[in-house]
Image 1: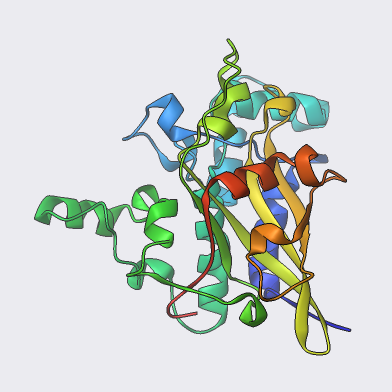
Image 2: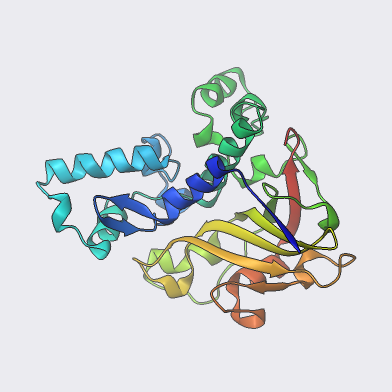
Length: 271
């Protein structure tokens, strides 16, 4: 058996979101849904598109303004600061920064130099996208045929994406907005960060994504990781065994979402 992983540069991005640290306090950067919050023009940090560095700088600013010493922070307090100030990362923003780091590590430059921004067609729109690329990159953009290619399961490699297009509306409305985010999210994206091979054939995929599951509650959302074990290369990836935190089959909300969506394995064209 052998293993392939993303570059250290890309893995570091995942770790910075997953283990966001201020002083000696660590938490997962929470999930943020811009469509639900209906914020469009704010700073990246407040629309789910902030880099780890930008989020860190914003938290430091908040702590200075509110006279909160870092040595008095707890993990729960740090998460509460992020959630209560609407600071977080959405699934496409998380994927963007990982793939951007990997693209640079491969010597291909930043991904905004390659992307066709499908939501920016007018002259003004194109200028907007050139100035604010991350803010105008969503799952549909990354999954569009202009930007990425479909990948057969036997050719999957680290840095490939699993995209899920199509909303899976929950039938269990709740007063807590964060509870409904995942089921009401239009599209979703995972990034494959590691692959285990047997006889040069991929048999286990490791993925990372930013997500808010109903069971997470307000303060439990963030970066999650899981695995997809492939039994038959000839069958769709939704026929594989999806495992996240020990949840499989009907107990795995992500897997159920995948079966109800247009789920594809894709690769950015220049990667």
